[in-house]
Length: 263
Image (cartoon, rainbow, N blue to C red; front, side, top):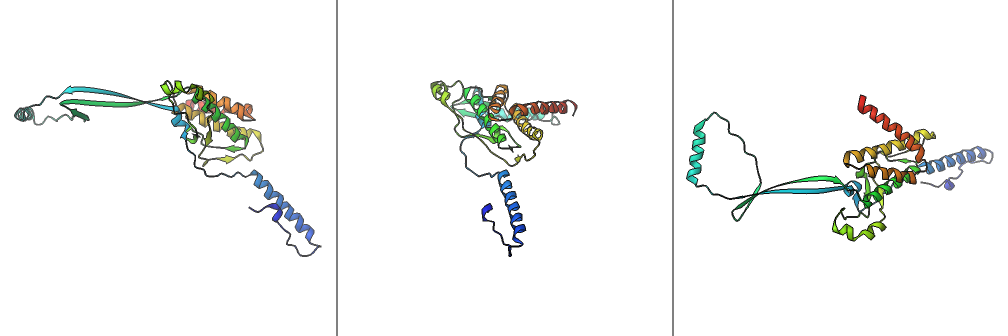
């Protein structure tokens, strides 16, 4: 972009130069105003984890059934199959379930494993949620609307990996109290700048941003009401117009409930 001071007058005579200078000055002022209203996004490689993976804790349960291996003579096996075939040829054969088993030293072990995802609630996650609200408030202060605020579009550069209740978390309690999460917002593909001078329109867009994030917490992280409260508390501390945005947020919630009830 060219600076406003680089624009020179290309007018010829001194008599007609007055109108040209005024026109160029007006163009210079408009370019300067547009430059102030514009926002630049820079690509940067950010290391860390998403807020979604930071809040989710996966617990794996394994059930093992052990049976001794009893061998059957081949003749008896063939005879049994012949008897079963002779009972009723028209009767459909029941399909057997596929079970993955492992045989070690004559012992067959059937292992069934399943995972359960729960929401991590501790001091670290509360700090991360509070800092997330402060960061969103600063973004709204810059007149930027994200448009797709979810826990997958929020990164933590320095996550605390110790799960709640583990030995490492108790041993590093001092470091946990001093930990300050570094939160970064990503994926501004649906973002926009609120250029409207009407404050209510701007508050509406900000309230929709918060409502989208609130719904993301409800649908992705079970029993995360405490974390949502921390996000709103951080937003109140970070956003200058938080009170007006919360008023609009209550109206947005009511509209969402009406759609769910009446379609």
